[in-house]
Length: 85
Ligand SMILES: [Zn+2]
View 1 (spheres, rainbow, N blue to C red):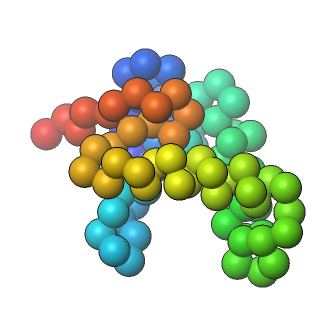
View 2 (view 1 turned 30 degrees about the vertical axis):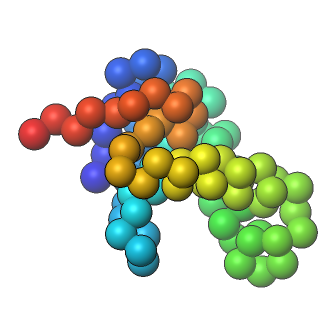
């Protein structure tokens, strides 16, 4: 599911992880490409070693997103994202 953040206009992809929590990932917007690639590197780095600094940053971002599992928040600006039905 891809939703545009109304606050920062970033395109965010939401996916449910194994525990059913929604995880947001910025895939567009200003700085989105950098953040998206960093997240990808972070996830990869975490899976392999977890030693890369960018992995730590990514884990923090991901952790913040996971804090509020019932709400979908923009991983970039933390604004609540409403899903248009
Ligand atoms: Zn946003």
